[in-house]
Length: 198
Image (cartoon, rainbow, N blue to C red; front, side):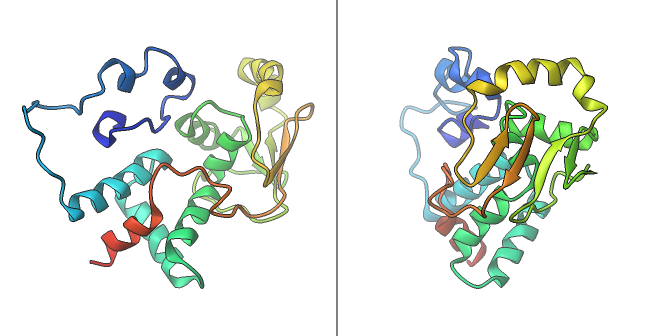
């Protein structure tokens, strides 16, 4: 997926920072190679940006289109609303807090019932968090080998400014909702809006 997009989407966690990263090993896109690459149309660029966003957050087309519809109904710039809604997903918050190395792993932690939202078990990765919500680990899950290793490595991880993390208790909180400037997106929200508005 990274090779098709033409840039790193950091889908494999720590592996993306090593020489084993597929983009570093084979920078060309998958498939048959031509001497002269065909020029990409505007429609193709819009589709590529949309696919990059989908791949980054690990969503299916129907899920992604549902979030886009929700963003378009909100007041303000639709592209910015889309970015904020994507960042507010529970699996993304688990990843941003450093509880996992990738969003795929974060989704698995949520689906397996290891994560709590406001001290209640949460197993829906697409749940949207609000300002003031707390995210932590279930009491039973803190005894797992993964959680014990996490407690040792969490000190080195950096948390975004709109989140706070108690590294001893492994409990995070949404201090404020993210702004488009806080989100280091590898895709352009405006181009995605153009894709769906055609």
